[in-house]
Amino acid sequence: MLPTSAGRFFSCNPSAGGLAQVSPFMSMDELRREARRLEHTLDAELMQLGRSDLSDPGASSGGVEARTRDASLTRLQEVNDAMSRAASAAPSGRAATTLHTLQRHREILHDFLEEFSKTKANLRMADERQQLLTSVREDIVEHRSASRATDALLRERNAVHATDRALDGLLEHAAETKAALSLQRGIFGGVGSKLQQLSAVAPQINALLGRISRKRSRDKTILGVVMGCCLSLLVLYKLQIG
Image (cartoon, rainbow, N blue to C red; front, top):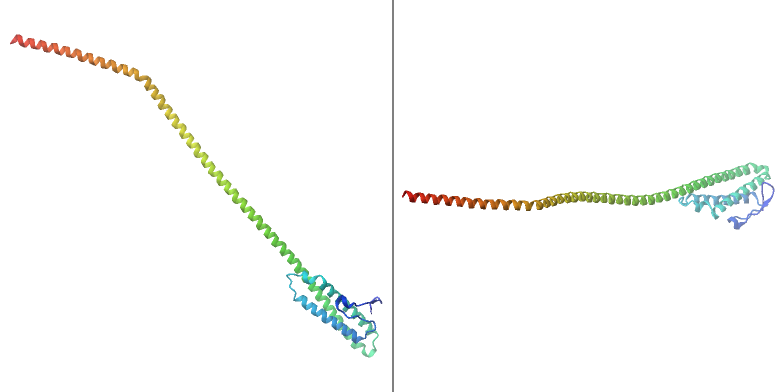
């Protein structure tokens, strides 16, 4: 048992942090040895904590190790309080040496508190930075996934637009073909009407040609008769003269 600053006693349980039990009847030398042992333990823990991988700060800043460090610091504080009370009861001849030793242990405790506080702050910052990096990586992965989805949608939209343009071209070609066929149908319709007109006029032409042919035959007949008469008259005339 060790008296605290409030005058009560506490028990240093060895199973709580591997610390030896402190008795209120321990001498100054025994308290100094206990303080040095605790200081060596804390120094080793501080070195181990400094060499820890900050990429996984949660492994060193919490759990059993953190509770053990806090317990060791609390015990060292209580041992220093016990040495302070022992120094006040020390003989006057050793008072200066005892106070000097006590001051050195207090400075060591103060240094430990500062170092552990800085280390905890660094680990906390590293933890926050790691969480931030993880969040940023997740955001990047999500953004890349969204970008890939957007790219796929853009490619699909471009394909649809290309199909629309091809269909527009086909429709324009079909419209041009329809217009050409309509023009050809009009031309063929005109030709058909001309042929119908010609077929209607053809009988009249045939009749006219027939009349012309008959007239020519009659004219030839008349001309032949006239020529025959003339020849006959000419022959008769020759015979009379001769």
